[in-house]
Each structure stands twice: as C-alpha cells, then as structure tokens.
Image (tube, rainbow over all chains, first blue to last red; front, top):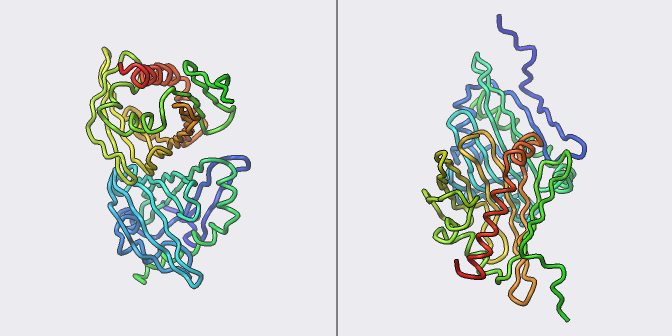
Length: 165
Length: 165
C-alpha cells in the first residue's frame, strides 16, 4: 500500500541549523525525476521558474554537464542581478552539484548538492544542501530573504510540472 | 622596516576547528604571487608538485579559467587515484575557487577557496579554506592522512619555486 501522507507538494522544508555553514531544503513534486531533472538542466525551462515571481531570467551561458558552467541575469523593477557558477557534477535524473555566486557579492560562494529521489507513483523528492564559505555568509543569505525566492520559485516549478504553466 | 619574523617557509599551518565543516591552511612561499599562481594553473608545473612524494600525476583535462574544469590521475605503487573538479573562479594572481572530488568517494565533494596575498619582497602567503559537505566528510579527510600529502606537496612546490627543482 502506498500512502502519500508524508508528501506535501505545497510546502518547502527549510533547515537552517544554528551555528552551521549549511542550509538544507526538501520539496516534493508530483512529477517523475526525469521531469524535475530536466527543469534544472534545460535552460528554456529553468528561466521560467527560478527565483521570486517578480523576476525575469535571461541565460548568458549554460552547459549543464559535469565540468560545464552557467551564468544568468535576473531582472526586476529595481535592476539587474547577475549570477554564475559551475556544474561540478551532473548525474542524469539523480544529482546535480554546482557552485553559485551572486555578482553583487563577488567574494561569496556556495556549493549546492541537489539530489532527486523517486518516491514512486510519479512523485519526486528534491533534497538540496547548500554549503557556504562561513556561518556568517550562510546567515546573511538567510537574512536577505532567500527563502521567499526559493518558495516562489519552487511553486512556479510545481505549476509548470503539473499544469504545464 | 620589513621583518620576516612572521614568515615561516617550511611550516604549514593547518586549522581544523572542532565540529566545523572546514579546513584552513596557510603556507608562505619565497616567490611572487604570479609564480605561486602559475604553479596552480599551469598543468605542466602543477603535476610536478601536487600530492605526496610517492605520487606521479597525469592530467586528463585542464582548463584553468573561470567556468573551466580539471581532472587528473595520481599513481603510486598501490594503484591509480582519479580526481576531478571545476574552476568556479580564477582571478589572476589573486584567487582560485574550485571544487574537488576523489573518484574513490564519488559522492563526496568539497569547495576550496585559495587566496594569494603579496607579502612584499618576493614573498607570498597562500591561504586555503576547504569546505566539506558535512563535518563527518571533513573528519574522514583529515583521518585519511590528507595533511601528509599537503605538507609534502607544498614542500615540493617550495623547492620548485626557489630552486627550480
């Protein structure tokens, strides 16, 4: 028997352990791992959902394979924000390890390890751990309202995956 | 007046804070930043000094620029060890941020932030912080004898830079 009691498609779980350098995120999607994976590696899909609702994304560089790199600009009413990073490892439908820098803080960098777990019945659990260069960097990222952008971004991804919008 | 009392060319400082996810290394070299930088980005120089004395390195891939990646194999009497990573950022003569995975532990990854500080008089301080995906990964790396390889590697680099050998 399969129960879905532990699956909450609308809620992001964010774990920010006190005094730690990392942030852990868990989010379930009503879509198969290959679809969630493709939404992270196909730039045309990625720009549609990444970031808060107020943002429009434009890809500068994108090579979603092990050893590749990426770069994009997000625009809202207040201006432009550039981001860049490397794809340390891309394991198809399973795992994406990448680096991330916001060009507004060029010396800050974090490493994200994202894994996809097949929950069966067309469901996928996304688990992401972001590791920062210090506890202070981690806390600044949290204070900047990062959670807001992640929640809105994954809600957009959820709608894309389940309703094609 | 310039004093060199705080410069110790032969000693590596290794800081492994209890319960932390990182390892911090400091090592001074009697060479200018551009020479220390080149020894990290020129693959023909890099293979000569990286790792313990018992190791021979062979480059598989190497593109030492922001967004590039690298891969090499180290060989000793016991076998071959593969490593790969990405160059998240390469700032000429100043800073190298890269990822690192030993293929023997394919799910482990760490992020290294290396900075070069010009101490004047042809001296450079190398500061490196490696951030691991967990405290456990960090402690396993330390327990594996990592320090031995780093000390011998930097001693080889020191001889290369100062004596050309």
